[in-house]
Image (cartoon, rainbow, N blue to C red; front, side):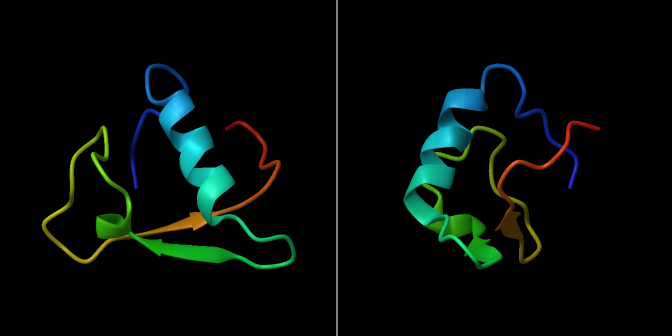
Length: 57
């Protein structure tokens, strides 16, 4: 997935993380669970995996 979540979408992704992240698990979230996704929805099945404290690339 290529997306810019460092800038304008940072607050949105923090809210998603707070809502779906569970300690000790790799949380898999279907894109349609995310309301008003800033980057829009993909035409192919898309899932997001939430990691805590991942490094910046």
